[in-house]
Image (cartoon, rainbow, N blue to C red; front, side, top):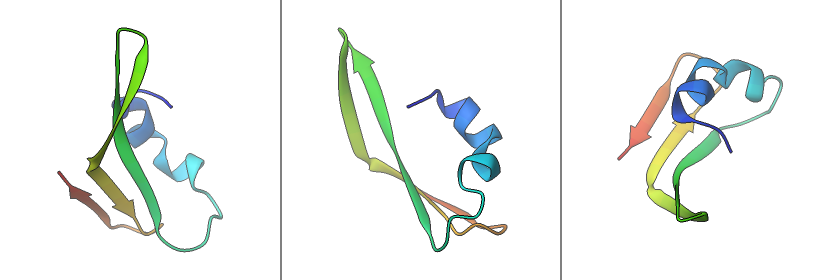
Length: 54
C-alpha cells in the first residue's frame, strides 16, 4: 500500500518481470481503517498501456 503518486511513478519497478496484465485498485484510510475501492481500477499491461477504470 502506498500513495497514488508514488505508485504511478514507480509502476515499472513494482511490476518488473511480472508476466501478464497487472491490476491495482484504490484504497482510503479513514479513522485508521483501510477502505478498499475496487471501483477505482487500474490495468497495466507491462508495456505502454495503462487503462484506468474509475
